[in-house]
Length: 438
Image (tube, rainbow, N blue to C red; front, side, top):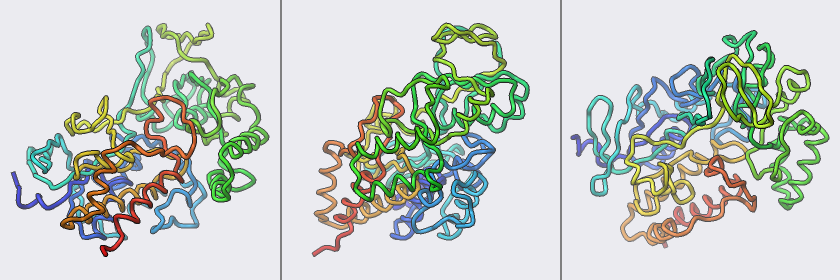
């Protein structure tokens, strides 16, 4: 084991958006680190065609360019408001080059285990090499380990999870059922509707749809304006629902379930295209699946359809399989960390990117990485009162990250945060940790 070579460094797992943000902030603060990346390049899930990448060819951002970009590295203004996967891939590569991050990344390298040894982390690589690191940052993403429901019966046709969906060519002239809502499910259904003989989408509950544009403005920018104006949440919910209804119509009339929650209390669907495809008859909304019957599918409303293929757009497990689950402080291998960021007891175990805001997430990842860097620097200062106070804080109760929104009780919303409220918590701690000693 190479103790001396690595024991002063932090191990950052993953060179996607989260890992790159950590690498940039660590480099700026002079914190020694290595990034371990199992693929041949940066960009994580935005590397179209890579194993474990959930990106399909037509993927676009669901948050607008200006609400998505890192604040210290703006996206090219010549790009569309909602850039596609190729532009995003180029953006992350440009980010890595601009901050000279590649030299600290070990590509084509995979971690098989991370175990605690005293106050260090022993990292075993797939090659068999063992390294002892001073700290560990889990930045390997949460949208790569597919979750497939255990449905009654058997299906004789073609099945795949949305993580493996790339383009519609293989489904031309077929009848396809997409199971699961969420943005990926409705995006895929809308695209398939233009290529298949018939596409069905089965959802268990109702969703609020938000168009990409409101009055010609990207919808998240429009929402951000009303938030900064101090508009009360209940008023924002009412006005947004009214505007959306006037612009998109009533999805219930298209056969979709009525939402049993208010706007923003569940992650919204940023897609109006699927509603148009339903109106055209290319996509048919169906109830929850009750049973698989060979080449047929029985739905909860008693209807039955013959289908050739099923695509499960049923989400992902929050998964960090390389670390001993006992260190994650939560059930089912999901980290129960302070601010979804700091281990409540260990001072050298962090997660970055394990959040889901209703708008862009990359700038929040940068804020997360900045706060981790400030904490490490404070903790390294002998007798730092700020670090000791923060240690007590992160061992206490979780703060309210909802901004007053009552998210529906579901596993999917375990990582949901209101981006304004969440950033406020990060900035409050930053002010304390970065405050010069008296």
